Length: 321
Image (tube, rainbow, N blue to C red; front, side, top):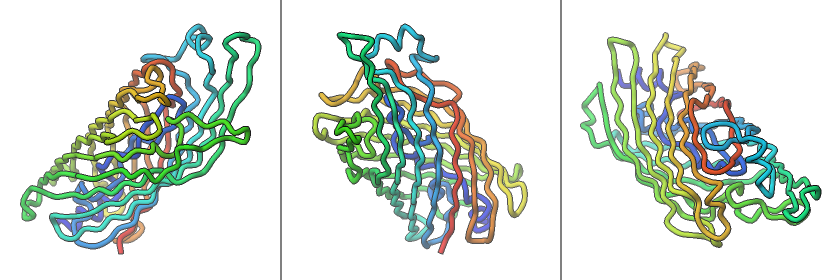
């Protein structure tokens, strides 16, 4: 039963995605695609997952809605858009039914543009833009299942890990202007990661649901910048339509505190976001599946004025070996 459940669920997960930093539109999708904590990877061994996501942030928001012209006019720079094309590579190894390790490395291709306004002369406007493709911050997360391995219908456990400062935080454009720290591919800090999860198999409904809470807390400050702490809560359900197709849905709620430090913009950072993500996975074989999700924002409350997006898209492939 566990083997069948694992094959059919490959394409659903619980470990929160990379950090959301939205002041200038630097973002990853909130969707979760680390299958191991959900029992998909039920047998010892290795798995590789490659996930592509498109996050085009072209909506200027204030509070819970779009920013007004008066709100934007008060800013010394006017946001235009940030296009994020992210590739996340995840390697997972399950030592046994209790312990496992996950390593995640993001590659980000980002284009950002805004208009800088001279505060002494509002007619003096300069367009500034950045375009780069760089490695982001790598994560290493261990997991331990606390429930008995003999349980076939439910399980619970914890995730403990670290985000390493592998991504650059000093990217500049062709004019030598440094990108804002919230838009950089790396935060420059080492972050602690702590989470807990629960899952339950519903054989009478041919499905399964899960829930997880994850906390990401920066442990230091780097060059006068520290990203705000994040708390993420996920609730998901998967329905096994047949031996090949699974239909899935997730609710993702993320609270991000304000950034801090002389290089931060605390008044223009931090948010609360709730998103809904329907998806599908298709088994190509017993070892390999492809999946796709549409990530839709249901609610968002941002501090100050920030770039955001209503929808983003994810496709990926996962295989064991």
